[in-house]
Length: 283
Image (cartoon, rainbow, N blue to C red; front, side, top):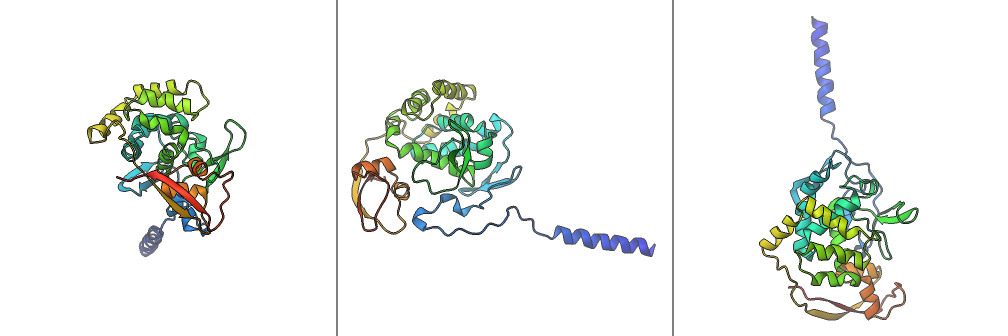
């Protein structure tokens, strides 16, 4: 009897000691010191990103969690509809278009590229990308794709990508709730090489009634037609660590636009160089 009691006591101590150990969700990596002007927006999140089946809080909404992996398209929509509506309010891109592109490009969050990079829109590295990246076979073998530590950053980069490049600028003259024009406009601007890309987006929007999210945003105060823009023009003096990409994000203008208005033939900058900046005035 004494032996049995002693065994139970020892077992209880072992269980308690195991339960008191703090689980480490992410492996440690050596910190990378980055210049603040070029700082990857993902830097505030753990480098390894969220593990599968782990609940991870959205930084902009601590009460909202994203579960990995996403089970199906319906769950994908439920998970990211709020983010898509938020991006529509901030940038004017229809939430239905954002969700449909995310579903199509990421395989509803289950595609190989998305699972290893959190890249929901198939955005490639392009010149000036200073963030994390990974390689994946797409139009060509081993292409470079942007990598994010949380899907939220992929949605935000998608908004910046479309709103800061001149070839997409005409889209923002469409009604913000006209998903059909946006779908065809994306193909016209060269977002995808698939000729049936617009039809695929429209089919997803109508199958899952994604346009209801556009209606919600408009009903809550977003003007469906963009008002005339006012611009401000000023000069930026290049400092150590500045890149055209970093400046494009800082001032919300495209790299192409910066190169065009400054007559630049390359992305190389020199300390002390003066750049003209033209951007929309904030309201």
